[in-house]
Length: 192
Figure (cartoon, helix red, strand yellow):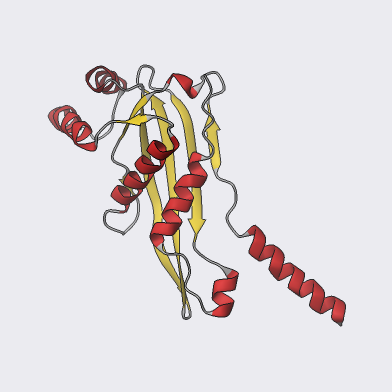
């Protein structure tokens, strides 16, 4: 009987330590080294959720994380907004094609752009316990070739077995968003 109790406790400890989130899926073009990318534009993200402004919140978080890690210079959002307004509204298109990306490179002096989507930005309730879930996909695209040079997708949850058992609140949506962005950016390998 003591062995069963010990096994149960060990199982709970393992689940708590390992967590439920897996490693993010990612792709990096092996033929291209990211070291040549010095300056990027972060395009407005798509929002596939019901949460207003989730895409703007995640865009700001990833911009902050990229700058704090020193990965790339990031052009100012206002400069990019003016460029996109002139380019995309006049041409009645919503996405960036290769000629537009090349003009982006020329006009704003960027080597690549980061595009993405917010796929989940929600709070899950289970009885009296609530926790946040955030899912996103990001891709870095070379502006000269239009080729995807890095892409990643992942999900992060604020669920905690310990918090649920002991009645603590799960991590809020901002904490979960930062954790997800950090985890996804950890897949970037910048080499010269």
